[in-house]
Image 1: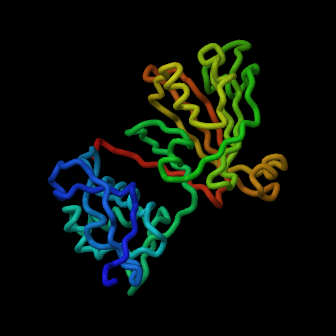
Image 2 (image 1 turned 135 degrees about the vertical axis):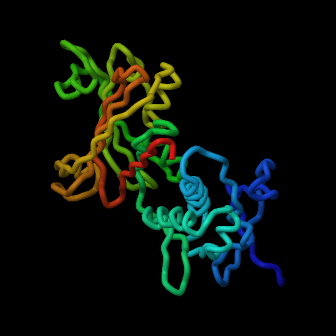
Length: 292
């Protein structure tokens, strides 16, 4: 009796030495007021490692990782407290928080404050690929989602004309065709179609892609250099067979994301297009300009 209720989040770690300290992070109990639904101040201790690029992006990423592990409706500490913890100005903090509000991770209410909410499922791409090229499975798993995959088609076929152009294939070249239904937390999210040169990646025709990432497989089995990607986003409509798979009405709008991944020398390695339900998906492009 008399003690504040606590809630344990084993994924939450922060150094006891603050912004400038380099002590290894440690798992800790997080004090949590069940009446006000507000975290104790030390919970969002600054643990952002120095990274290239604007500081608000580092703050935003750290906050995003923290709030995804919090109960909904949890209030964030006031702005002055967060500014002091992160060692940033209010302008920098607000840019970071604005991004999370736009993403659906946080909600601001006049007279109430800023609190945690749950966004639509994000299908996130970064245009500059400053950090890495990551597949849907890797990205969503890192966000704590349960990703499901059902392989619909996996075979070697002659390259369709459009695919041959994207992969710079000549003549009657064969490709590995891979079609998968991807789901998040049990709900269908999109149908992904991928094509790879069969002469370069023959084992892709036999690998079990019911789990894991295609990109991870290519890196692991072939040491593939997935260095650059060109992404085109447009809008399509669901054919009857797609509608059945995605549990939507035929003719419903879909986001169509087309990606061609190349190695450091510019050689095409993978061409894919994903047809996503827009009610549970967003496509994000983050551009870095001149390292700022």
